[in-house]
Image (cartoon, rainbow, N blue to C red; front, side, top):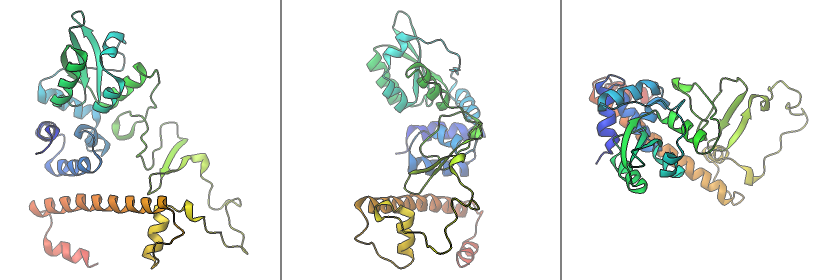
Length: 283
């Protein structure tokens, strides 16, 4: 059975012409691989801005939107929802009303009835849901629960705090940068850390070949390259190296499923012919 967010949020976005069926299939494939919420995936893939997605959800569900940028902190409401639950479910307690009997709750996915029931049971209050963007909610949680100011970025038309999964992100300051290798390890954090290849500091001495890195420091990419070159897993490699290689294999399998889903859709819609596909694969 498809998750509720697919049936409601996906159909709402297609009906509002925010995305089309092909884009929905792509977003759902990414959602199946990485998890999360469909509204966030659509924004992160650059298919639509978070503001556009949020407005479409409001209109499709006939619900009110709440802007969390300048709300007044309500300690009573914050005490009703645990911060870990708020971060996990992308919800934020906005206001406590009616002498504590009613809780106004901002949600990225108001169709998530299980989360509504969970918050109502824990808060012992009637929950009134309102719609907010997931990045808005993340920022409100940082400000009001953790007393932190979020790092603002304009990637895909909306702010969001930096994520460990970003392979390369340059923010508005023009100096912060992150590069992540295939194993998920951050190898470059700032532009200043990158030394141009022409620099004498990094140029290898003509008479000396660069020493091979210790086996325990091998990345998944190094291991994969050595295997593809005809080598075999060496006893010098640590258990951590082999786990990294296994992670690469799992990610490739997931990517293959996404590609297969896209090809099936293109064939189904008549946008691609089997002969043309076969010819391209032989190139």
